Length: 108
Image (cartoon, rainbow, N blue to C red; front, side):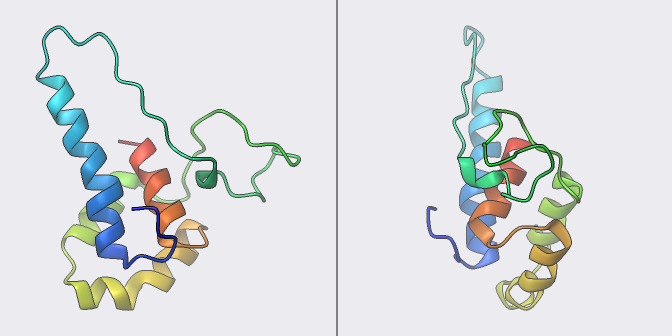
């Protein structure tokens, strides 16, 4: 999804699970030589150390474990995910579900 404030469950299903399914599909391709994942500049928060107004071309470390968060969200009902969204965004240091889930997908 490219909606910045999509419900957390929907954003995870689209941006994180979609990427995970693509990676799994690619692992089954015997002759595949490369998978190029083009993400977005929005996964690198502007307050990141060392950015100085530039978006660095690197996978930025997360404040939380990506796989653990994916499992936590997958275990939640849509209502539980909605209730937990603000706390998760604060814990992870992201302004919205789009930025968070795109960053998590880079860590798969």
